[in-house]
Length: 280
Image (cartoon, rainbow, N blue to C red; front, top):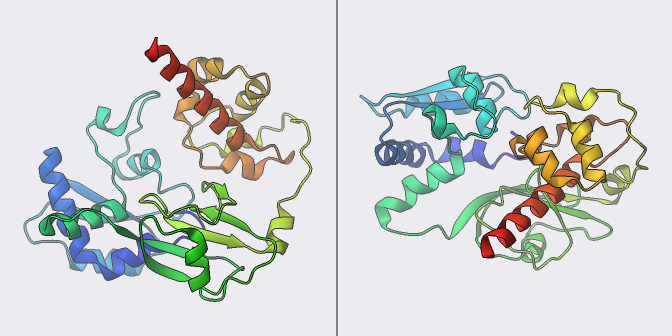
């Protein structure tokens, strides 16, 4: 559901049989009785296409949901489709649900009958820095530099993002490979990069990040704790691990505070501390 990315949309339109077959496999493996496919209502052609390919006798339904970022995240989908909220610190399975994305399930439906592993994926390659944007089937492990050569990379000062503009990490090494989680490769040109070169100001306690957070967290408080490196407190008292890094707080912050980047650093530090503790 991120801006720019359309790989899942094209997969639904062009490989509906693989998707339905994959859903059936997942339902059988997880012993599930019902499957609900949630698609944003600005993609009604995909809704209609999948409804046409629902296998007879299967308990699979397709539902159009409001087009609103970050609607595609698993916890937001569960709330929209089932009216259920995943409790803090829990996962969808704890409320009797399994959530998978289109790319994963379609790959299962395509590869499992052949006994093959996943060696490629559909990637949205786009942005103002290239001549031939589109969705490409790219082998896993392909360096992004090779991909850029194929899509008319214009050169100059650019920012490369693996994924979407809200959640994808920025990369600088052109040898960085495409992986199974690479849904997109976004190339921002010099003008777009300069737009993001903004001065960071102290938090003014405006509360916009609280209103924007889909998980009802307190990004402002978390950001202040991150500045003090109180990472354990962020997780223990302020539910840091419930943040799925959608980027809404950073986007609306009038002080340009890189909140999501701070949260990622905190999570990485906490994971490292847990690993060190387990080694002892």
